[in-house]
Length: 306
Image (cartoon, rainbow, N blue to C red; front, side, top):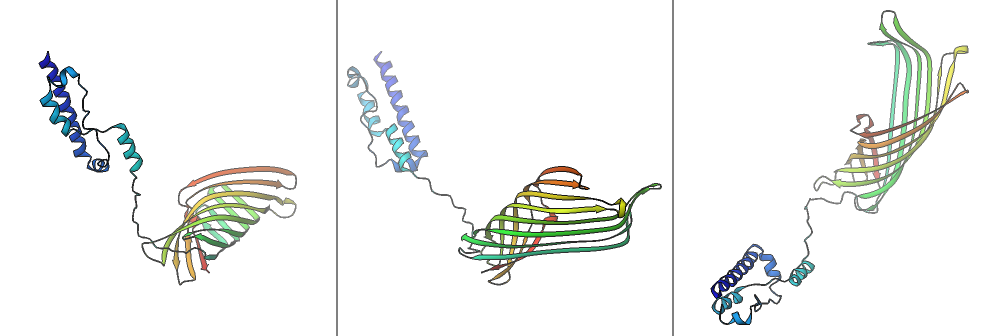
């Protein structure tokens, strides 16, 4: 019986010693952190008094001297005193637009087209004039290095005069429209937040990302025909747009730059009220979410950094 107890106690002490040595070998940093703590080396195992002197005196003595005890209090102290180092990507950047700078910008677009008996596939006898004009001033203040906020205003006017147009689908199947007139005015106010970042250490080329919230409204009128056959409609509209607009900035000198931006992601809502022939009233609402690059929304502009 004594030999069996002696065998069990010696086996348990041996396993405890190997476990402590393996923990020290695989966690050198933890062992270094707890080296200043007090370790209990004299209480590896509590044996009965009847066995402590006669059963395993020669086995317990060397194991007690070489065994390391890690108590819950030690682990708790290590966790409280150990701090994680902040991870840094070490991306090389420079300040592209400093804090306190004012930015004034202006964007202008104009298109015009004239057609006289123009033919294209199923379109025949197309005659008319169209033009579109838009101007958008903006101002921005940099409240932090490479971060700023501002406001934009925009006015857009478009006109279309169609004297004649025929759509020919086949022999005996054609549709025509004569004397069509359309005029529209729209106004927009936009609040935006812009973040700049340079390309490497370059202070001439850089990108920016802009978050916009736009409110707009306008009116338009549409007429068709002449004389007694004339009919028309008058519309008023309200629009809300929220989107992300990335862009590229190229400095020409210290005070002026060329900017190019394109709409990528956004949500738009439009509500329209229509009055036909001053009698019939109609309402129309539309919602759209855009998650792709819109090449028709590319805008070129000039900005002045004051």
